[in-house]
Length: 169
Image (cartoon, rainbow, N blue to C red):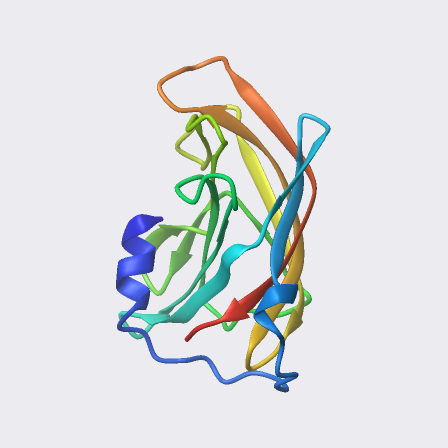
């Protein structure tokens, strides 16, 4: 996912819908972790573009106000421009002969424990839907089952996830 963020800094901007001039104070990522509501509002943003001319890449992230090194990063890759009709999941996909992971999810809690959902992490899953795409923001929903880093049996469930994040590229 971190490589995705680095790669996206050189990406071309996807052309999409309208610009609503969102106020950054309204941006957020909200979710429930094992039933406990969490909200992140610091740096709620995305980076999007086309990597290597073929992979449409998107990184969605936000941080906690109480601990700016903790928060959420969701990485998306696809062979087509992102849209509001596709359900994106944590699986391997082939894009013009290149194998990549469609969706990854990293959650770092306020205690600095890191959790991950990826097809490489057994027993994990992630589902994401984009509900609105505009020149200046993305909105959507997500859920998943994430594995605590350096363990094989400690999981958290993410439910009722939603994002309204600024679009930086």
